[in-house]
Image (cartoon, rainbow over all chains, first blue to last red; front, side):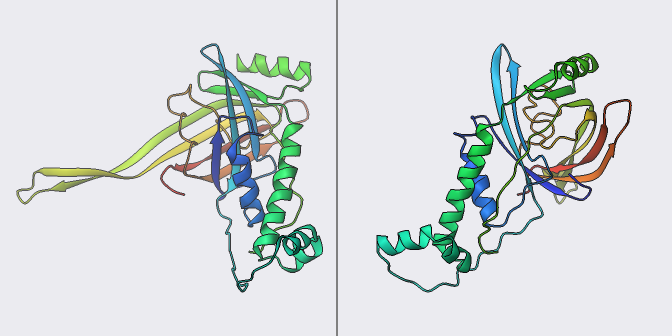
Length: 152
Length: 110
C-alpha cells in the first residue's frame, strides 16, 4: 500500500480453493494486472452470531492497465498441434499474444496460486466496536496474547 | 500487454490490530427546481467515503475485510475503487510496529 495508490478489493465468502475469484485473479495476473502491495491476500474467519464467517479479500492495483493485442491470423489446427504448442514453453514465450500462450499461462498461474493458498491457514478476525484484530493461526502465543490485550 | 509467464508470490497479512477506524460517507445531492423555483426532483451523485485507520503490527492489505459489524465500515471496501491518500508506517524497537492510512472509497467506480 502506498500513497496515491488505487486499490480494488475483490471479496468473497467461499474457501479460496473453491472461490471463483481465485481464477479471476489468475486470469488478471497473466493479462498484466498487478496485486496491490506485498500482502495482497487476506483470508479470515470470524464468529458472527455463533457461526463462522469466512472472508477472502484480494487487493488488486487499480491503476494497472491490461492491454490485449489480438494480432494473430485465423488458423485451424488439430489437437496434436494444439498439444505441441501448449506443452512447449519456448513456443508460448515466443508467441505471448496467442490464445494458447494465455491458456498455458492461466493454467500455470492458477495452479501456482492454488498451491500457495493450500498452504495458508485462515487468520482469525476479532472485532470490538470499530477496532479489529487479524491474527494468523500460527502466530506466536505470546504475540496473540499481547494483541488480544490491546484489543481490550 | 502480452501474457505474463512469471511466478506469482502471495503473502498474507501478519498480526494486525486496528485501533482506530473512522469512516464518513459523503454524497453530493443535486436538487432540480421547477419553473416556479420549487423543488422538483433530486438525485445523489458521486457517493464517496473517507476513511482513516490506525493500528499496530504490519500494515494489512484488504483492510476492514469482513466488516459487517461496524455499521459505518460495512460495505466501505466491498466494491468500487479505494484511493489511498496517506500511508505512514512506524518501526519501534520496544513496541509494536504502527501504521496509519487514510483515503477515499468510490463505490461506483470500477
